[in-house]
Length: 361
Image 1: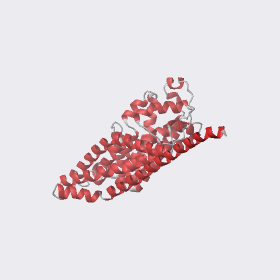
Image 2 (image 1 turned 30 degrees about the vertical axis):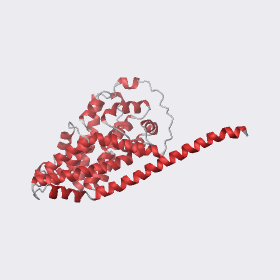
Image 3 (image 1 turned 45 degrees about the vertical axis):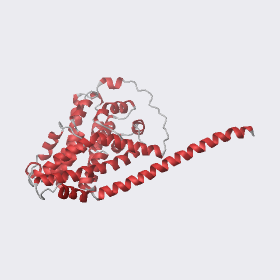
Image 4 (image 1 turned 180 degrees about the vertical axis):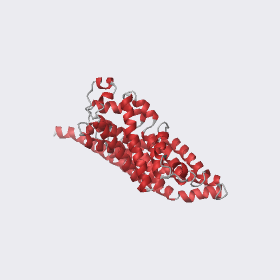
């Protein structure tokens, strides 16, 4: 009896904690539902709001170059930010199941082709930026992940991420977004497979393999759905805070092109008839530095002015997937020969995709 009386307060205390957690989660879900309703109202009324601001508040002349540039800017900035917010939130929740440690465990010991496919898919939903290239590379090597599989992940993560996909969806529709995702993953799988087959481990800097692999055993923490919602909110705060400036600058450049560059002007430079435009756009894109948020609005404006889809997407892929800062960072762990193979294989894949898009569309 005494034992029961001692356990009862503990049991009651545990129940109170459970009830408090349930109430907390319920309040978050209710707030989330309200936020979604507000998001839908805002997104579905963007056209009306833009026309009201440009035509009524500002009273600009319809059809003028400046008017169309301002209309493009005022409409695209909130549209892109709204789409980005909801997609980053959802992907942030998904990422709560995929820590870098779990990713290494999943990929370790996988056969080449299966590993390339899995690594490319994981790259889409795993946090990545150029600054984390070395830690990820070292962690994968230490965990026994094959070199080719590691490169599939490093290629897919920056190129086929949620920011690129949501911007492409918002500006071009789901068909183009799906094609981009499919071809981006194909490049990551192909390049990683080729690098793996070439057995280029000797071109990794010697000190990388001398690092003693520490224990990577981690305890998998069980987190509640309420905490996963918090993870999604934190992802929105972190990612949107980082890229909104790029979005605004990119859309401003796109607005200038949209308003002032004559129709079909770009056709002679980046059109289908210019056979050399795809490889040249890739070569131009490599030394440039931008992320998807900054480059996609420019891509949209170029397309409107007569540039071909394959050429501008090849340009975009080279800017995002073969950025100069990432190559400089990777040079610390890779020898020049390995970097040259990496750029050549990925670049060749992007050129093929560019010509393929130009042929299909």
